[in-house]
Image (cartoon, rainbow, N blue to C red; front, side):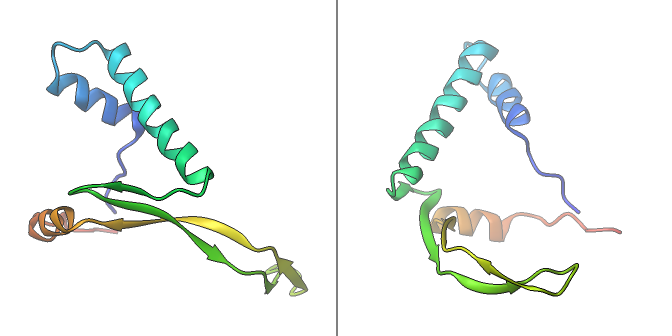
Length: 104
């Protein structure tokens, strides 16, 4: 399985790529961008970043589910869940990227 990039690893890569910026500046910038995106979605807005993709909310209506331990019926409340759709440029770059063999 491929490891996920953490926020701290993203910040570290950005610091390496941008020598003129301090780690603290990059950290504050990344946090500000993520906070702004979170606030926009929490307000019900859609986010579109050209060449990267878009973030929106999908509505999931209330439904009846099962407790896996007891088998009892439970009501799962309605909710909004974040949804990401990759942009064309990102899809093309990802499709052309070499694959890392998954081993178990």
